[in-house]
Every structure is written in structure tokens, then in C-alpha cells.
Amino acid sequence: MFASNRYLLRGIRSSQVLTRNFNMVRKVSPVKKTVSTDAKSEASEENNDASKSTGAFAFHDSPIGGVSTNQNGHIDWSDSFHGLGQASFSKQTNDILLAPIEDDDIEIKPDGLLYLPEIKYRRILNKAFGPGGWGLAPRTETYITPKQVSREYALICEGRLVSVARGEQDYFGGEEKLTTALEGCKSNALMRCCKDLGIASELWDPSFIRKWKKKYCDEVFAEHVVTKKKKKLWKLKTNSFDYPYKAC
Image (cartoon, rainbow, N blue to C red; front, top):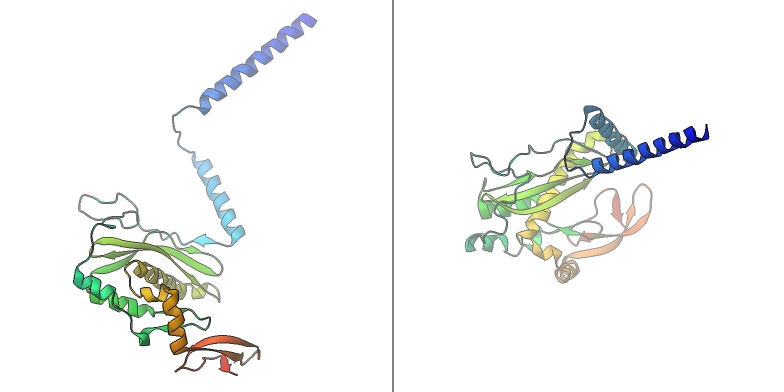
């Protein structure tokens, strides 16, 4: 009886060793196996659950992918870096892009941030490259959280990729505000891309910012007309505060 038990244990141990060796061989196998439909659906459900837990989701509006350049010469700008850093633009174009901005074109936000209205960037690009000579191409899907949208864009000028930047825009008031937020996100990406072209580069220079604020702006206390709370805000010397604030 004891002898038979010993043989039985040896047989079990041998089968376990063979199983472990077989599993090790399978783990190092270089052959890639396709994922089953059930596994894909389970992974998709897990991703959806993760998105629900964070309150974030994607619009699934990613540009159509494919080869970077097809037989017809079409370039997939969602993936390609065609022409990036290839050569400088003409002197005439560079003079337009690098021209100092007018003081009257600059605006200031209540928190003190200087900015150039988006339409000014578009006018400079149209003047430098001509209408139709430039464009903004999306490179990713729109990523949406309960309070912000973001998306990556590429600035294309004269058929060449010039810059890539991710635009972002905060929004409040629910899904009905998404359309406006998406446009704001695109404008934000355009502004960031134009920085690589040298457009309005003064707005990134701390020395220029300090001098311009001192000359054209005031930081004064303002009162919220509803809550009656007071705090310091920035404004142009020629302008007054907008509702719901008023100067104290």
C-alpha cells in the first residue's frame, strides 16, 4: 500500500514539472496570437468602467489614420511630420511673422494674463501665407472631462508641418456648452502653435510684460455686485470693469 502511494506521488510530481516546463516554453514563444472577441469586449468594458469612474471620455473623433503618404501624395497629418524644420520661409514671410505687435492689439485678463485675440493670429497668418496657405489639422481625439476639453492640433503652412500643440478649454454648464468649448480649445491650440513661428513672442517675455503692464494697466480693488466680495483685479487704464465687478 505504501509503495503504491509513493509511485502515485512520484507520478503527480512528474506531471507538475512537465506542466511548469510546458508553461515556460509557451511564455517565451515569439508567436503573436490574436486576441479573442471575448477578450476584446472585456478589455473594452474595463476601459469604459475606468472612464466612468474618472468622469472623462473621448469623442471618438480621431482623424482617419493610415499611411503617412499614399500613392496620390496625400499626407496623413494626424501622424506625419512632413516638412518639419526642413527650411526657413522667405524673408518677406518671416518679416510678417516676426513683426512687433501693436500695443493697442494686446488685451489683459482680470488675473493679469496678457493675450492677443485669436482673430489677430489668423490675420497675421493670412497676411504671411495667404488665405488657404495654412491650416490647423487635428491629430488626436477630443478628450473630455466634466470641466475641460483638450485636443492636439498641428499647424500646417505651405504644405509643411510647422508646430504641434495641445489646446485646452474649461467649460461650465453641462454638455450644452461643449460646442463652444471645442472652438475655444482649437483657438488655444492655434495660439500655442503660433508661438513656434514667433508671432506675438513679446507676450512670453517677462521683461516686456512688466513694462507693458506698468504703462497701460492698473491693478485695483473691485467689488462683486452680488456677493459684495472685494479682490484685486487687472484692467486696461482706458477700460472699466465688466459685470459682475465694479471698481471700489
